[in-house]
Amino acid sequence: MVEDTDHLICPSAELVERGPARRFDIPAEPCAWPAFVVRYQGKVYGYLNACRHVPVQLDWREGEIFDLSGHYLICSMHGARYLPDSGVCVAGPCKGQRLIPVITKELNGMIYYVKPIAAPERPAPGVTE
Ligand code: FES
Image 1 (spheres, protein in one colour):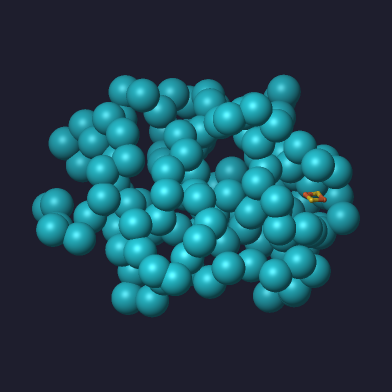
Image 2 (cartoon, rainbow, N blue to C red):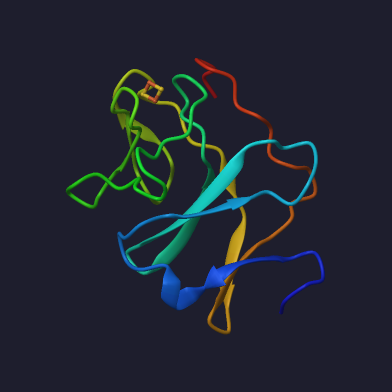
């Protein structure tokens, strides 16, 4: 069921398996970071677009976040690699840390951002969870 507070990101067909991420702005305060969704192994995953090493956006060109293997999300700055389905960094300077997830849902051919009770926090560099 789509709630009044759900925010449409894009039609499902626009988010292809291991293809370009779809970026969007979090429609809530106080989060100032953009976010993105990707499709991996058929499921949609969403994260704030902020590396856990230094708070910069991951993509080297808008939406280009998967590495060449299609199995990792990669930061364009220093090459940290994150698992698409958990956001855990498995290689690079912030290994062991995790991207901040955002809640999404896919319903009736559309992908939505689901507003949480509390907005995602802005990540700080080098903070271990
Ligand atoms: S800023 Fe992302 S790996 Fe350094």
